[in-house]
Length: 203
Image (tube, one colour):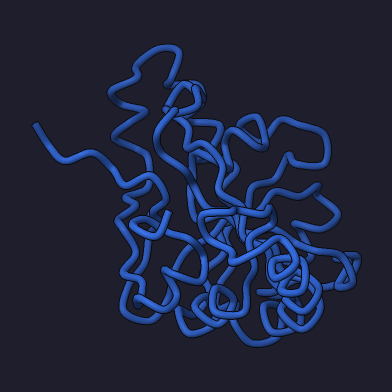
């Protein structure tokens, strides 16, 4: 039998220089971003913005790009340097006694970090939570948002048609739908970053 997927592992589409993440927005944010190649008004730079490397978790979160204000799913390519900066400057969004020396230490880190890390159940093709596998969400705020918008983004594409096509095929031809999913591989994390975000084996 193949080895089990680690409980907390980043899986993503990436190459030597960049990594792909996803976000979902309404037309009024998605269309200007696609034209500009990055996020512009009315995108709100003062709010936390969450990026997700998992296509299926984005499908779950947006209801296959059908939920209100999430009808456009964007595929965003960012630099690996920026992605790893975000992880290095992050804090878990919830206290984890296995990871933090104390709740007070976690609260102090939370106050000073511009990035939040959240591990949520990964989804199957039919959007059923996988009980033993987590998918990462990365919340960017303050200086992290500025860096994301102005420095890290290399391309933005509209992934909405792909979302809709795969969703339709889940009902008529699941193997074909599976074939159309983006290829996502385990992302090679330096040990200090893996420790910072409580990735397996530091779970």
